[in-house]
Image 1 (cartoon, rainbow, N blue to C red):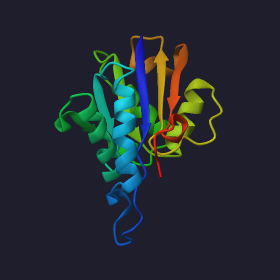
Image 2: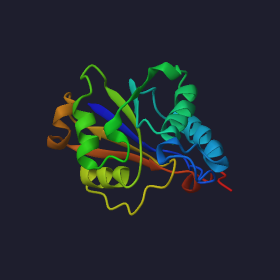
Image 3: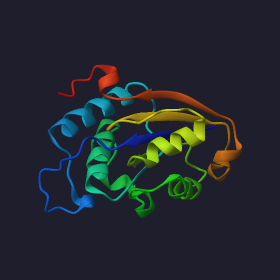
Image 4: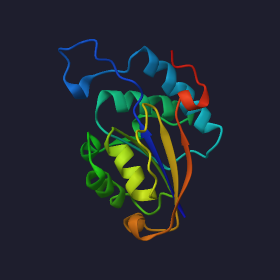
Length: 168
């Protein structure tokens, strides 16, 4: 069995219009939600074997809170350019490159890719995974390359407002 955790980055700031999209930081709400979601998840799952992020600042900043909650080092975060605004195929390409020695993987990605990929993979009909939303999926395989040819089960779908984690 493999386990996949998909995390949409926390709320980002649009305050500085001179910044490129990939350089936008988390805003106040994002800085509040990310550590709360990370801690909530840490209490419910074991530490993922590998953490992979889009190279955008907001995904890396979100991932940093999760790494800290799981007692991992920032240097353990892997970057994948294909995850920067990646669609389902881009995410799939990254998934198929994961070493099979890793039993669990956590990806930090963007919308609409995360919502589309979760729906495609699980057959769910989630309208929109909100910022800092996390979906856990169990995969009945030992090979990340067989992710689409195995049984899948959504384990959970958490997001800050749905857990009454303060977002205001």
